[in-house]
Length: 467
Image (tube, rainbow, N blue to C red; front, side):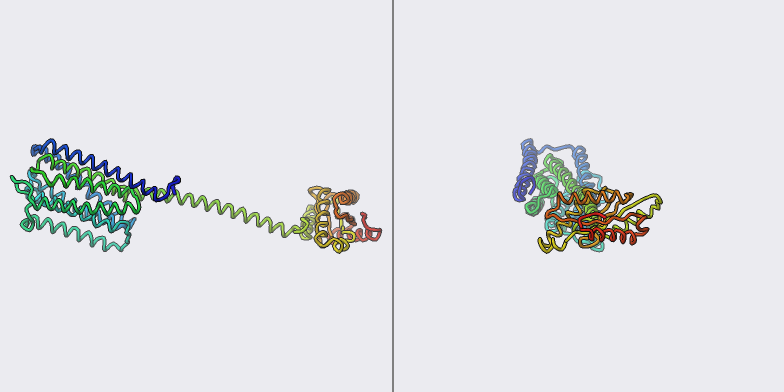
């Protein structure tokens, strides 16, 4: 859906738009044809008519050969035998039109004799090839086939051979064809029948393209349909002119000029402009995809960073209480000693719960876990940001207080005990032993041993105290 419209509704709108365009083309062309009929078949001077005729035919030849060139080279990009087939057909039509206007009655007769019948024969050949080309092209539309190039050259050779055959037979054996125009009498019945056959083929082509348009609306198809409609009006003019210099014949050429303009727009849009638009669209889609990919990469990188942070935290932090683990404690203590500050004094506090087993047995392990968390929270409420609390295992914790003497550490220990009296639920107590570096031990092992010894002393003196 687009703008709230279903695909069926959009197709109906496209068809209505196409019908309006067809009606406009029919009204304009029909009005010009009726106006010419009302004004009568005015005869132009030979010089005036030939000038206009040469300009129109030269333009048509130029457009036909340009279309062939465009489709020849664009095939390398889109592998479309549909466009290439139309290009070959129009190349043949271009040669027919070229021979038509240089053999027209009144022209100098370069390469071929100039007379009305010969020119009309080339005209009929060109129109017939064009009608067949667009009728057959309906069955090739959107068919893509990339060959190794030999088939493309083979089709070109066949097309040029057919053109050569037509030129040879019209020039050397004109009696093979029925008369198309008799000077002084006008068009023959064969010429009129041939024109209506061409019109019939073009109607078939229009029907085929309308069917394609109903399946998938496309501005290119609209232009091709309009081209064939204008060509039909052109052929209608050629069924009833009396003199090769009269106004109805000129109007037919003007219609053909208009048809080639529309056809040029169609081929240009389909084979030149559209690929560039598709390239621009593809670049925009690629840019969007790159932006989306970059966003995904950024998000994945962020997720990875967060995962790494969580992993690093898991490697250094006790998952239950949020206190650092023993490995992180050792790292922090080593960093502190690595500063090599002779006058510095540091303290550690070793502590554990008084009767923690009783808490687990009485309230359950879940409450025991909550008590561990409560202690860590109480400690963090009291200590400085530079201090740290570490869980060594079970209900055993060690606090590291950099640049803090024993007396200061005892004050902190008492604050923690007092804080627990406020927030502990169920109530529980702790015993704490304090050791000072370097007085009580130069190494981590010795210092922790001194703190443990102080902790045992606190337990022996009745628990719930600091030593």
